[in-house]
Length: 91
Image (cartoon, rainbow, N blue to C red; front, side):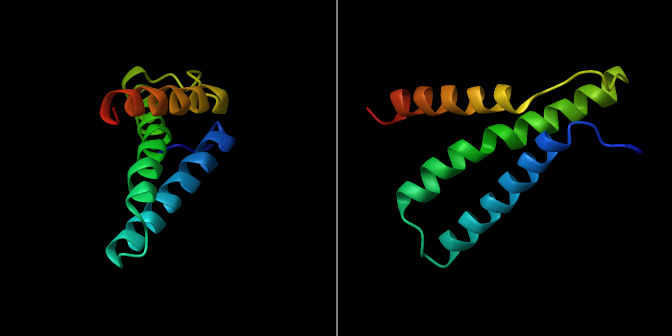
């Protein structure tokens, strides 16, 4: 496995996103969260989770851990996806 995990900030952001997703899903199962929270927050949280998983797949396939994904790239993907998803699905 990976002896030293690079990009600690990105992986911390991934971990926080997964924890936040689990909290939102738990709140949804107890019917505490509104539709706004469950819809929009999950849309925002899916990008960092998928991005880090894709990065690990690339590391595995290429065998090159020098490929990087910084927090600014993830944040820009999140903002772009929020504007696109809101424009497409909420007209």
